[in-house]
Image (tube, rainbow, N blue to C red; front, side, top):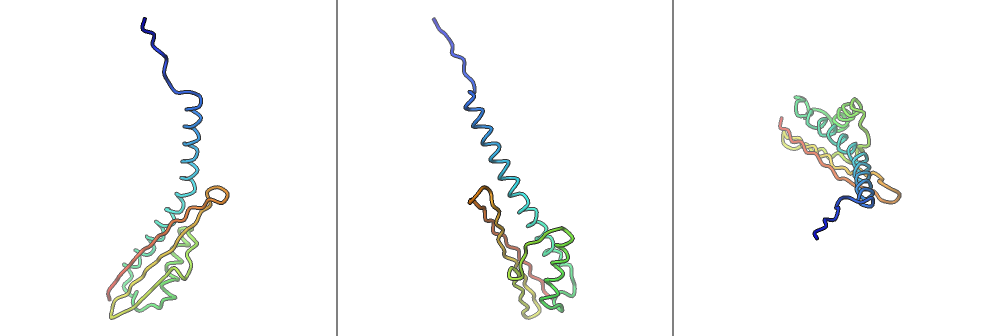
Length: 122
């Protein structure tokens, strides 16, 4: 006699799958805004490439331009220490390096490091 056993997912399997799905959704809800902000910062830095008088501007003016573009996108959290602006021999280099930290649950944080680079000649 060949009796086949019924096989399928158990209640415990469904519970574990649901817990995994909730954990992934929670992490996504916390991390997606970090990358949206980084995308806006990258666009603000890249838009400086189109500015013809960029080399003539001071470092404070360049930071102000970026801050205004970020304010238009409702993006914040970029400190002045994040900007490194260098002018040498007709070339301007702008580096933006920063990290964003978000709390996931209790004492567990996720830290993401971002960097953007722009090099433009006169």
